[in-house]
Length: 195
Image (tube, rainbow, N blue to C red; front, top):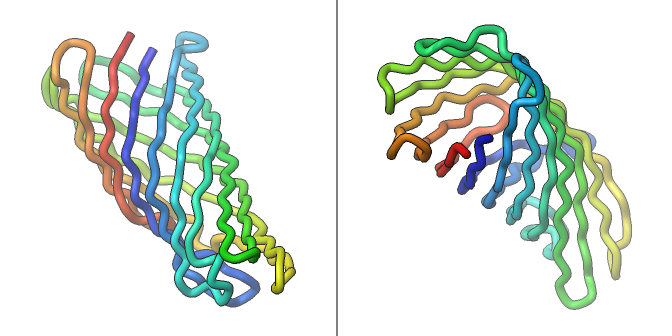
């Protein structure tokens, strides 16, 4: 079983019917991954996020905070002391909100990901990971108060990837740095432990 804690910072462009808004996320994530079968891994993640969307015309919609919950399945295609190759399917539901002087804005969105990820273990403590995949995001922003409306949004960009380095601190724990690219760009610092 692998339990990890991550500090996240990512940016994505949301398309509101032709109005492209750069949206930034800062957050914390706790994830748990465990073998379900010899070649299948299952995981769950939950976390806290803060959202910044300064091009939002509603002041209450320029910042917000919320939470997310996700699940994923990974299918091992190769797993040996030197290399690991897997395909991952993931789904995450996120929600955030903010209220200023009676004006409220809430976002909720669904996110689906498929990735091909390869890891090379250079030594007992050092490994490098690269991935490429596709992402689909569809959501809804709802405003209540003096301004009351609901708008769908999505991500037009679908290709994403990441590159990461993981360093073992001892036999059971590790620290990693990941750079996210493509539809979501940013990075993560990850602390984990095997049980």
